[in-house]
Length: 567
Image (cartoon, rainbow, N blue to C red; front, side, top):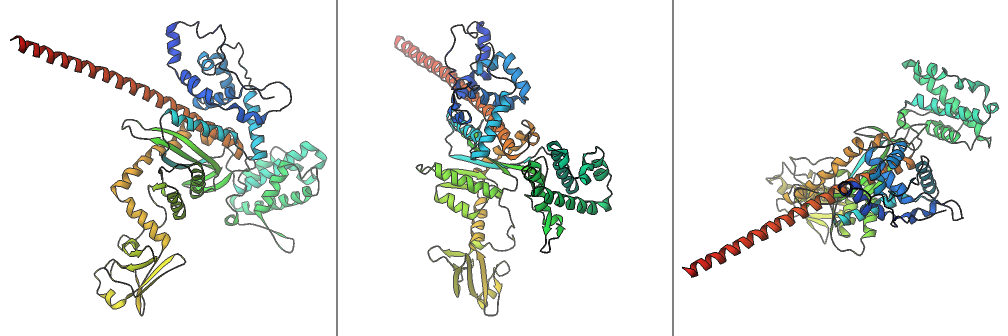
């Protein structure tokens, strides 16, 4: 049964109030006071009421306490056991969560596992990510605390490795068969075919996989895949078997690794015919393969950061949005999805939003759509083939925006005819005039019998316009702000161990990733508020000093005037 936590009601016998003043001051200057005042009250417990029964039963552990502790866990790099110990033995932690007056905190070693299981089951059933909703809600409140208006955004992505072991193709097929046979044996040993009981022997894997010679790999792979197909045929007809998770993974492996011919025979697929989204690990079936910088098996995350760099000494920033997908999801897809979300959120807001990202997000249709909705996109570079520096850019040709045709070449020559068809500009120029042109060696036209022809697509033309704008001083100043977000992937790897999360599977690892983002945001909030406080104190002190000096000057002038009058 769901029950909201009435944390604000304090006991008359308050442990904090019984402390000496110097200890109170230490706690009030620590992270706990900010967490207690600014973060803890924001957590929306009602969002998570759907995880609990409506029937009268034992009430839940306080959700705001659980969420807070899971954020603190990532801030300090604790395990679940360490986290429980930290809560029970650390008074500052108890104070941050309004638990300083409770003899026994309402948390046990199973609380976090049970909560994560509920969230996982709910998202699996409904597709709604409660953790992401809560963390993005908190992050937007953090921007209000730091006076970040959300008009400047920067975006980056990072690959997240699965914690599953990276397997060779031979080892993958073997492991899938082994897990199926093992689960079949647990269900009922009679169900395991006699010829496959050998998989249950301890030394079978070592003999079959690790002692194989290079020239035997292909033959052994063929044998294993044929056995996998036989087991698939055996299990598909049995209702006890075909509902097992290990059988579903086996069925997926068979369809991804084999070609089925019309004569009911099978053929092993070559490695190049196996798609990146195919099964990479028997223990993490959601993980996919992608070759970017290094080979990666796992997932990809997209980070969007709101920032304010008006102060030269310090840039305030908070991650206001994140997304987490299988690693075959491209940056352009991330960009398109975020722009759609941003447009829907800012329909009534006419102020311009600036977005800074690298060239992997560039898509001209996306840029046009964003521009139409008052979102200006800036790119630090553009991917793809760069133009020949020894040739004229297509942007040097003058285009009539109304007619949408080329009307003049860089040397001022008017085309004989010009048109725009299927997104391609084309113009025919007089060959004789082109021969005398001083720019002929740099021209991008192609010589034909009757004329010289220039052709380029609208996509190329707009990309070249962006490249030209990117070389300006104004553009470089805008994109220089992107450097701040490039440290986030490194921080998430070094301080938050995103490549070594202790879970497998897409939904579970996404949940852990969300709490790591929240922990990073909390640290930034603490730092930002501390900076603002110190900066305000410095300004106040300077104002006091200035006022004192002005008083002295005024006093000095009056005294001097009196002296003159007296004389």
